[in-house]
Image (cartoon, rainbow, N blue to C red; front, side, top):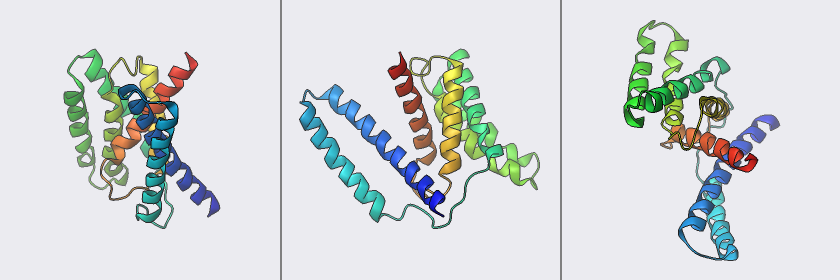
Length: 187
């Protein structure tokens, strides 16, 4: 039970830290303010986020994780969407729409298959990664790594942030920001 709570806490902290990191970049880029003022603003936002996470009922009480054979489709969806977006030059919206629509028909192949019924969600989560510009994800390896990271986030966050719109996009965004940040640090 403690392990499940630790995983839940870890996932919530990742989302909160990525929100704060993104807000810090926006504040430093758009406003010419001192570091102290920026830290004070971020501290207030962090406090508000913590209060929101603590007092809003965003989670189920049981602990379930998505199966790994399902989340392996996140990097596949990301890769297909990125190839259509960048290499076929059709654009991110057309690419995501095409892959998402195709994924929605997968359960019709075998209506009795529970596995096929679970595939559209991770594939569609991957399309949000594939919508990234090649200026952000410069190679197919970055797309695959971001897809794998998003798959891990999706697997661990099955019962987190339920009823909140944008969960798949947030997972994809978090993985792309994390990979971009790691790339920026290492280069």
